[in-house]
Image 1 (spheres, rainbow, N blue to C red):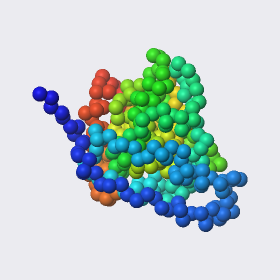
Image 2 (spheres, one colour):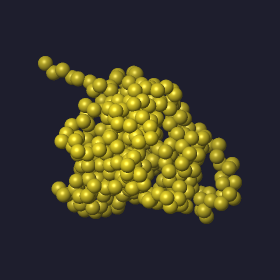
Image 3 (cartoon, rainbow, N blue to C red):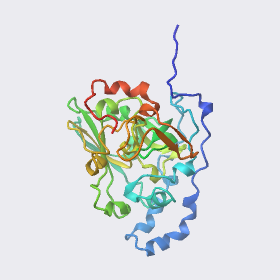
Length: 327
C-alpha cells in the first residue's frame, strides 16, 4: 500500500485565504509625476512609471499560473496591500513602510531586461527576461517568508523551480555555488547613491541548495506579474532561509567554484553570514529569533526551524557542524 505523507507545513488548498485586491495605489500617482520630476529626478525619470507598470509586462498573458498543490500554508496569505507596501529593498530606500520603497521602485523600467549567465557553464550568454520566462513553465506556490528582522509573511509566488533554470543554464561539473547579482542603476534607485553599501547586491547558494525542490525563481505574485518592489522582473525565493538571501531584480547568475560573499556579509559578517538558515534557537546578535511577527495580522508566533521546511532541507547540511549554519 502506498501511503502519502504530507509535509509538516502543508494544509489543503482550501485553508489558504483568497488573494487580495490588486494594489490600486499606482493609478493615483499620475498627477504627481510632474512634481517628482520637478523635485530633482534624473533626466528621463518622468517616463519610468509606465515602463515599471506590471500591467505592461510582456508576459502578463501567462498569469495566473496553475497553483502547485504540494506547497500550501498553515496560516492565511498576507494581504497584497500589506506585503506590497512593507519591503526591504535598500536600493530604493531604507524605510520599508509608508509606501516609500514601493512608490520609488515604480520608476525602474522593467524592459529591456537581460540576465547574464556566466562562469562555469557550457556557453556563457545574455538572455532577455521574456525569453527566460517563456522557456520555463510557470506555477504558483504558497510560501512562508521570514525576515532576519523577525517579521514574517505568507506569499503566493509565481515562477519556476531554480533547479529547472540551473539545468537550462548547463553548468560545468566544477561549479560548486550559484552567485546572484542584482541591477545597478542609481538614476532610478537612490539607495545606490549611498556608498556605505558595496553595490551591486550579491548573494549565493550552494549547488545542492539551488537544486533543492524549494528553491524558486519568482516572476509574479498574487496571480500577476510582480510589481517592482517585490524584486521584479526576476527574484529568488528560498523560504527556509532569512529573507536577505532572496536576491531581488536579478541581472546576473554565475556558476562559480568559490563561495560568494553577499552584500550583507561584506557589511557586517558577524550578523549576516552565508548560510542564514532560520533557527529559533540561534539569536541574531541584537535580537531573539525565537518568535516572529506576522505583518498581516500583527500576531506573534513561534519561529520554526528552517522556517517549517526542515523535512525538505535539513539533509542539505549533514556533516557541516563546523559551519555557522544559522547566521
